[in-house]
Length: 382
Image 1 (tube, rainbow, N blue to C red):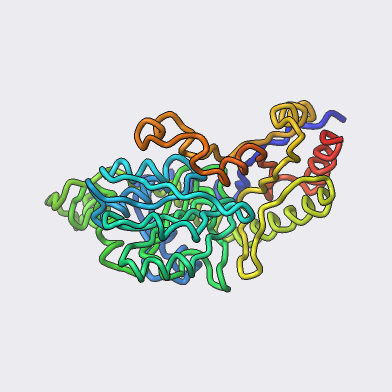
Image 2: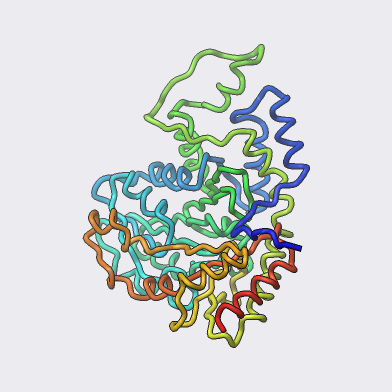
């Protein structure tokens, strides 16, 4: 029997999600409404954090959080170079300057030992990124933030369900944590994000910014079409349009119920890969004992003598999809122009990137396919 192509990161959408979306469509309420509120409440309970606001994306969640924290022209925010473009883009869109930091060569996370030398009088905060579902050494981040009086906003796009010292990401002492629920993420709402925080004032401001800066915007929109509705509204600040809809939240409500099982399957698949590929010369992302990774990605580092493009091509011929995430930001032309950075500036990140391949790891992939992928990688390396 001919094998189907194994997609790099297929979503796992069940009948309950589909039924909930249909319910929203039939209800007549398809924008921000009761399902968004329920999803926010459920995320708060899951993360053990009191406040949350759903957004259109993790990018908008990060951007609006920085705006709510007052980041602007002349400010600097420290971010890893080994991350997706949005982490730095949101800093630039605030009128501030991203300051790149190199990676830890073992964990692939930002190298916390290099951060303090980058802190200046213009530094407003740090955005640690939990790459692949692994977790940055947050105790060191918090110590630096307290010492220098700067904020911490976690980019947890990969880390819904990850844990650090026994606590879920989202429940730590950061000013805010931002999640992604994009189609490929561990929990998917197709498009979507969330800001969680223990700071009600911050969350209320972010919520207002998601709806044009209108006071009590959700209550106004949700009551406008009821018998008790009120036409009056007031734009208190210059906001944006970045709200999540009930159609997206309908997916998230049921995806969240399955998240722990999803992540358990990902952890199981990571062990299959490690056990089958150990001794091949492949390197793995080190996950410390006090970290529980959500395994959003399973990155491998190919042996130095292996041609990565040839390896990816041969795996594609075997109907296996792969990805290379991420090309360090300082190697992109936009940031080379903006920040005058060059190849060689962040050597650890470059060494990771040069050998990196991400292989499929999703609960929607059968275990037999995971074994087939691992065996195929071994054959390609022979």
